[in-house]
Amino acid sequence: MPGAYNVSLRAFVRTYNALLRLFMKRLWLLFAQAATVLLAAYFVVGTLKPQWLGRAVSSTVGTVSILEAPAPTPGTIAEGSFSAAVKRAAPAVVSINTSKTSRHPNARDPWFRFFFGDQGEQQQAGLGSGVIMSPQGYVLTNNHVVEGADEIEVLLADARRAAAKVIGTDPESDLAVLKIDLDKLPVIVLGDSDHLQVGDRVLAIGNPFGVGQTVTSGIVSALGRNQLGINTFENFIQTDAAINPGNSGGALIDVNGNLMGVNTAIYSRSGGSMGIGFAIPVSTAKQVMESIVKNGQVVRGWIGIEPGELTPELAQTFGVNTQQGVIVTGVLNGGPAAQAGIRPGDVITQVGGESIRTVSELLTRIAALAPGQASAFTLQRRGEQVQASVTPTQRPRPRQQQGR
Image (spheres, rainbow, N blue to C red):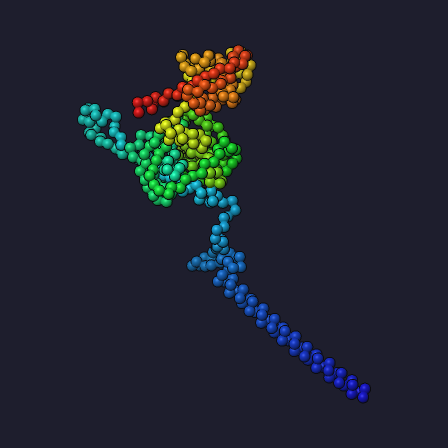
């Protein structure tokens, strides 16, 4: 019996080992088949739909192999992109085409006509940009864009066109307001230019050289630029965003698409951008536009003085013990300042309770005063503080505007 028991046990072990080998063989075969199918599927997907695997697309054009990035997910915005700001602001930025008829100044001289013939009339074309400020069709642009134009056409970003009429102009700030009659106009959102800081990112939108609407980017290079000889009232935002001929009147926006300024001028030796551009702050542009729409012109205060920057030499000469303010170098006889007792040599330190540091600030503050309403001026006169109540009148129109 023990011998038979041993034979049966060995037979069982042999049978078990045979079954185990068979099972492992079957399991390995199944694994090999599954791996083969997965590798084949990976190869097919990697060849036909590599974007499913997050890989760059490799294809062949002729004999040149190229790599294509996977298509982005619809609706996503690339990191660092300003596309959202541009989509918000660009529809409200327009191109402005102007035409003007001109004749030679000597065209009526008989001798000129004898030697040179009848020159006839010549058409001059102009180009600029503008910003739609309200659903009523008011468009803000630069005065020099539309000055002297006989016909003005506004071209919207959606390809609509409309003839524009001039509501009013302000050469002293180089701004003008136009009006177009179209429905469903895109309107730009006004930002707060008073809170801009040097280094903030800005974008310029316009129609440079007539190539079509163009967006350039840069930063705020400086604030409060003045004494450039461009306008009477200068308080420019300086930027290195590329501004070229045709950009005048276009929008300077922030990264949220809000209007920060109206592009006006560039510093250039070649006629193109050199990284020094200037824009009128939207705070100034808004005041000018509202005054033009309401009154047909900009109503500014005027007191009849000639201001000058206060230097240590002038302060010593007039015995003034302040280093801040604007010195009065001349007073118009019979003007509002003379009637209020202001004299040459006085230093204006405050207007309406606000400190004055530069001539530009003084002119801006006086211009903002309502004609006929008295305002408090704080002066330094020979070391003493003097209070004066000045009632401004309306600022006279520039000579080039008189008679229009």
